[in-house]
Image (tube, helix red, strand yellow):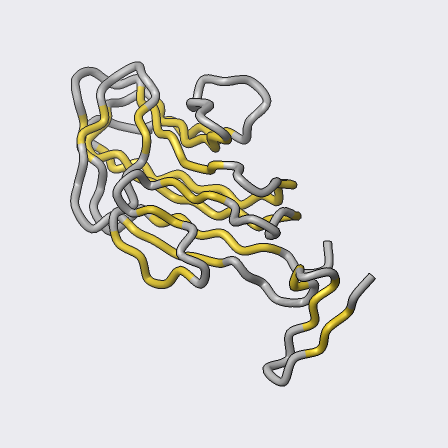
Length: 165
């Protein structure tokens, strides 16, 4: 077992950073996108605030765990659907390795609209054990009538590896 101490404060065990919270990224929706009814649609987070390891792809809205960076990750996501109707709901869910929002065994949250033409916002935070090469994205669903738009600037997605886990 090799332990290396770096001048910038990093500590690596066998080439894996054990204290740092990297990789890490944060992205948001900079341009509204359509959300078809009664189907899971991938949430588009097109603009990065930062990305320490270049592991987030803005063209696909997918985070890929880099080689040697498996471990426990804190995952945070929010999204909003504009103008859904009274008694209908929206859902946001975590997709791993190509799974869509309707797959079982993944994190999912629901919220009902209290009246017509409301913006509904959902979010979640969770910790998930991931392996190198795992691909993470976020899905949204609504049960309202017709295609609805995402609410621009109400959508964010961020992740970071929890050091030492």
